Length: 331
Image 1: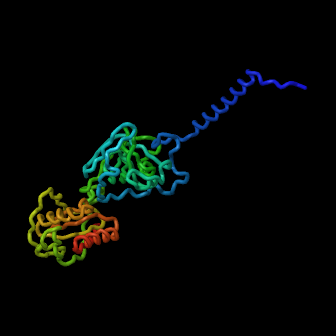
Image 2 (image 1 turned 90 degrees about the vertical axis):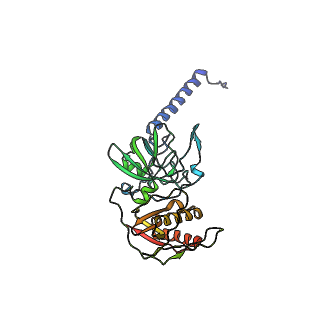
Image 3 (image 1 turned 135 degrees about the vertical axis):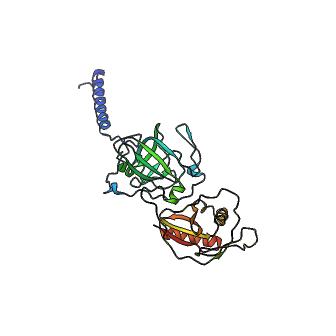
């Protein structure tokens, strides 16, 4: 009966070398075929398996005055051992640097603002801009520009100033790699006046006005005897200007729907009422502006993208202050 013998060491070594060689070859093939994407740290990111048609025709983000959230995504944070302090004021920000993009790896996940990331929408990530914000991004190599909504944090790579959605990068022709860009935050004043647009300034469209409404009393104070009028030509007493910094006087507003809270003969009356409303309705404060449209000064809040949104805001104002706002459309 033949005896069993253990394989000799050289035979074992030969088999191990063959196995390791096969594994190494497979690994090299995989590495060579993995896509490299400028917006991700690994080859797992990239475009969607099925790219929607006509993405290049996707409209830019439409800037709106949205209150800057306190805390949450705007509180200081740390990433990779580095501290970041987001801006919490409505200030202009201009930067030059590199732009990257991110795609399917993060598609459908929550952004820093809590919104769901859509790689086919016109959005972007920035390390310190207040959330939410809107920004104009320009590719100096070809002159292309886009407007995006900043709703996420990043990119956390040296030299990069913005991380674009797939569609925003597509429209700027930056899908092939990281590229230099110019970034400019769009301020509330730019939005209110329509100055952020490249076309002509918008004009106001006349709308029906309500009758004068009583001015609600301040909390804990006596009933107010002054009146706030939205009607054309109504006689109004001049109200004292409250302490604080008045808003800049505007002569035109951005296109969209505006909620008019009142019209005044004196600018001081409009500004005084603006500060009074701001103290009671903090959510409305960043949306308000005083417009000079002779012979009246109009206090309006907006712009809203649709009449329904404006009416919803008007209802909240009506419930809180017992006055009847009117919707103004600017085209």
